[in-house]
Image 1: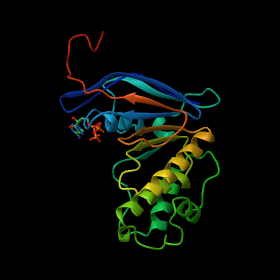
Image 2: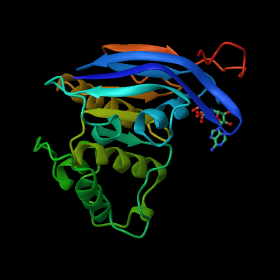
Image 3: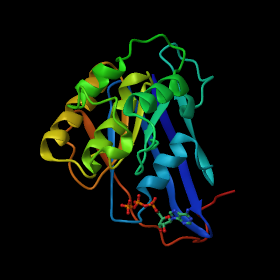
Image 4: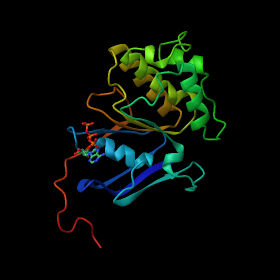
Amino acid sequence: MQLAAETLAARRGDDLIFVNISFRLTEGDALVLTGRNGSGKSTLLRVVAGFLRPEKGSVTFTNSGGRTNRRPSEVSHYLGHRNAMKNELTIAENLEFWRSFLDDGSQAPTASIEDAAEAVGLGGITHLPFGYLSAGQQRRFAFAKLLVAHRPIWLLDEPTAALDTNADKLFAALIGEHQRKGGIVLAATHQPLGLSNVQELRMKSFAGGEAGVWGA
Ligand SMILES: Nc1ncnc2c1ncn2[C@@H]1O[C@H](COP(=O)(O)OP(=O)(O)OP(=O)(O)O)[C@@H](O)[C@H]1O
């Protein structure tokens, strides 16, 4: 299995955000995106997730059988800055929605809703409306979404924002487990996640528009 980006460039509005980003990740690899605010970390994650079209370059997914017939967006979990949960629905209802929406048809084992809640340290409260929870509890359940449906690639944007130190460690352990099972992780962060087998890609702000950047 492989996730590969080749000479990616992205634009937001009139501005080029980054150019010439390439990486190649195989089973068990993690790549952490670092760099100052506005350097393009979220933009790169959104390009890989398929939410933004790259200005140049490509992202490809190759499965363990060597096939490239699925787009990275079809095999990736995306955890953005926002939790993507409905406040009025219960936690269980939110997670049930994501389980059916994100199912990749692979029949790979996944956690039950209650097991996923236990895994993020919050068992026994999945009957509550999501909106009743604290910011950190909401972030923990947003992460639980990754456990109820199987996707081999995890795209994580500031996964530990709003979390206490226990939750930091817990997330690092869950990400490590995903890697050990052969999963791939691409994460943007300002604070070390405490992962092993991790590479860093430091995003540099791009002044934009210089001659020669686009090639032929
Ligand atoms: N929807 C948008 N329209 C236009 N420009 C945008 C949009 N979203 C982001 N940008 C610009 O793209 C650039 C990169 O933003 P991005 O969110 O990718 O940075 P980041 O490295 O993730 O920052 P942070 O560390 O603050 O989360 C910024 O200059 C930002 O102003």
